[in-house]
Length: 268
Image (cartoon, rainbow, N blue to C red; front, side, top):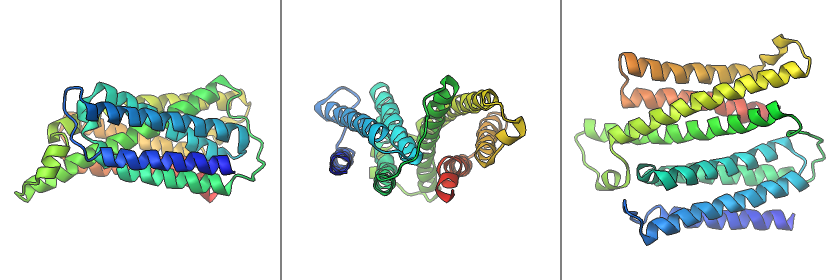
């Protein structure tokens, strides 16, 4: 338990450093601020991997393992996107509340399940492995898409009020760039969520259960998320959608997928 708390403390200190680095000015070219920022993300990814290995070997709780794996995948995705896209780096301030909630949630779930003795085998089937990884990738990407569309939502409101905010203007990408990033992440969300559902279906078929039992609350909510996400892409392409409407629809999708992955498990 002491080792687990130590890992969480180191993770939180890494998060505090990330929060401070978010308020430094990062240039388009490679500079010391950008290198330190990327190294900090790499450090959070490494600590996330250490946390995942510890949970995998010492804590027998499915929700704790899934949240630890989600944290690991989120930081890997964030590090990769920050490495290839300067416009994505400009979104970094928006993610401070999300990372804080994720760390707090992971800590309390982990602490409460240290003495659990559940027996689970999450990685004994190829389809199940694919289902878990693509599900968490879909969740990470729709979270990023939500944060990106939130930038559009904020900037759109300031424009309608005819107000100029230098901090928002200097810190965030333009409305066009934010909306373009949000839509691209939605496309990726659709891909990974579709793979997740299909791999989950194949795993369910292998178990020999009746197909009707596959459509439980988690699957139905995931299908709602997929439908709304496809609807956003389609309507935006055909007749157009305002930035505020895109944000509200992505938020609805995010609520569905969050409750699908974690809400039902917590209620259970």
